Length: 251
Image 1 (cartoon, helix red, strand yellow):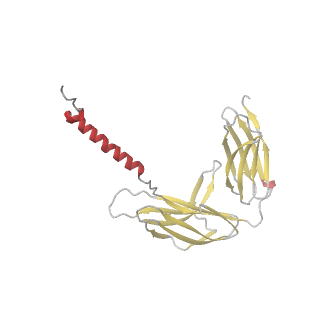
Image 2: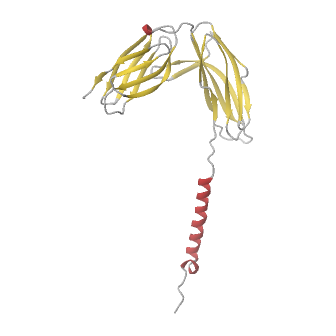
Image 3: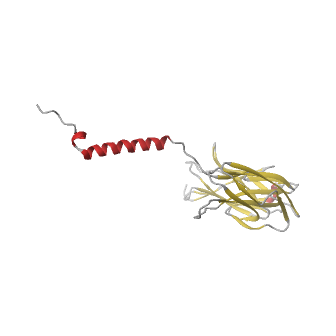
């Protein structure tokens, strides 16, 4: 009786395929087992608040394996109704002194930048932008990353409830969206600490944001719950506002 043949021995093509699959499996296992490294730059904290004047610091970190050149630039800004910031050169009435305006960060290094800030008139606000640029020996495409540290200088007297106005608060059923226009009619700065759309014991929470003097913010909150929301609850540092919602669209 003839011996039963081994296909991997009698077929060199199949043997090569089998060895290739083994090597591929080993590569995949090694890749999955290898730790994942996240390369990033960071600035902390992102937002700080002071009353009247600032004497603070922030840290910049290079968590990559490449040295970074960092340039710091101070800018003023305004905020549009949709929440987008519009930046410009620092207003002449705001005075910011940085401990440095440029530095080099080695891989995995953190550096603290100290600053002092005052303003001719309060409230005031500004952003320190840190631009990270890789330092490499060979030429090529260099990706620059800009990260912000934003400072708010509050007036001494806090804003009162009478300066907050809410218009067009409604729930749009076709869009499943809560809509609202929020206005600060005063010359004071205030932070909306939290916005909550409420339906009974169910709610959707939106993170806080600054409401600049004489400015308006348009809110649009996605609503995924089955029951429609009944009211908005806005939290401020010294008071809260409860605003009933009108209903738009078929129930």
